[in-house]
Length: 428
Image (cartoon, rainbow, N blue to C red; front, side, top):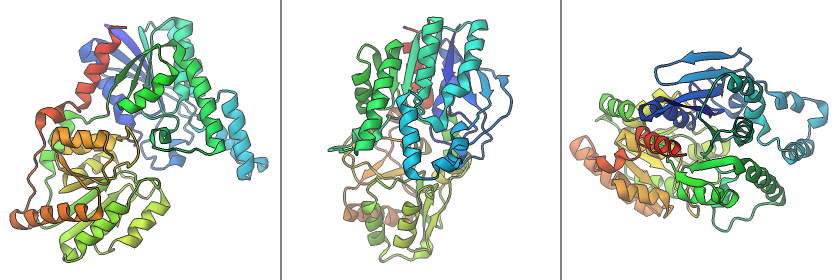
């Protein structure tokens, strides 16, 4: 069986939406002829903020063999955080100059420095251990720098997996970046062109995102590997945690960002609640406190009697909240192409009615139409009308019918996407 080294800064027990993607490769590749060796940093599992995800963990290296993969966990030294605390870097201007310098010399995403964390260990490891392929996944983008150098030194095919772009606003219509952002993107693209020269295959989570990466590496084969959900985990959770009959539950699970259009959601919910007994309804915003402005917008705009805004919670609890909901809401990215976070696929796995607003007229619309797993609203009134119809159905029957097409939803399981990727890697 051929071996593949997978370099990923994020991996469980780290509680971020990107970690399950790499875990699915680790757990499912072996069934399709690839034995994964995953290298990551140490995580405690209690990290719930940016500060935690960038924080130091100096536990010594550990190597753990599981049935389907080997996991290497390495110490992480948060060197940039130490520099930040020096008096000279007390101002925003001095921090900006430091960042520009680091980026200019190719030290991309220095707060999550997988390159420095993994490089020495992996050079020694690969001198003693034969692997057939090297896969790096980003964010952070410095994993591609690492994989590029390892692939050249050890003459192995290199697969670059992009969960995000270096600037996701590149997918926005009429994007006008600031001078600083333009400079940063120029540096990103300069180095990514260099690092991707050795890439044989580039994967990404949507076609528009793949098109952006293809600009930098037109020589490499490109493949869309969407995010997804774990088939058995979600099937069991959906059965074990049915929605209640005494409360109508609307939930947002995950981060809402300041640059998303939340007006349709907020105004539509206000219209929906106008003639309701608030004791019948729960509005859950789980993991939404990451951006203080967004949390305050929700708390000030919706009735506190039925509104709950919380910090990020463990993934197992988040899945339970999904399944105990009647409606799962996702804020569409109006005016953007190709943005669909991992959460929309987990919503599919929960087998609960999905509501998208506003309509992105892109990948989200296509998913909902293809799977028949929910509805889309493009105005506050449309959202209120959909919610009212569902609420009446729940009042009459104590539940909501779900019309998702199982065959189409199955295409978005982690297992199916991992199989697709393993098959292509073995062709290299």
